[in-house]
Amino acid sequence: MRFDRDLAISYALRVGVSISMFFIIFGVLLIFIKNGGSGFTLAQIASYNPELKVNSKYIYLGLIPEGLIHLDGIFFIATGLWVLVFTPITSVIIALISFLLTKNRLYIALSIIVLFNLFFAMLVIPHI
Image (cartoon, rainbow, N blue to C red):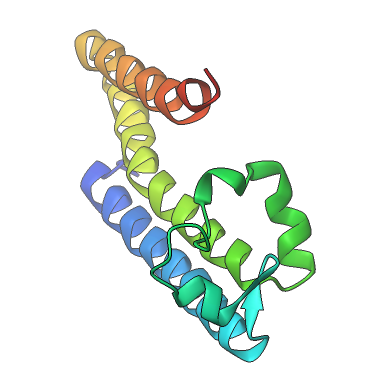
């Protein structure tokens, strides 16, 4: 059986976007049903006042599982956004696997550099 990179990437994009949409829509519904989330009321979340807005930099990755267990809409939306961020990264990983199978050294190196830069920018730079 032949590995079809384009087909694998198209499936990864479809699945990633679908899962992301599910989490974001479910999170928004939870916010309306519970009249808020993560300690903020619905009025505060919808407010244009910058002092009352939910700041995503305070939604740490480590807090997401607990937020999901407590059915907090903010954390469902955060999960959907992280899934959406990782969807194109999955495409790069699939391309890397394809290049490994074809032993294309130049694109293997380029894919690894792209992945390193993405993870460094997402996980290290915000904490510096």
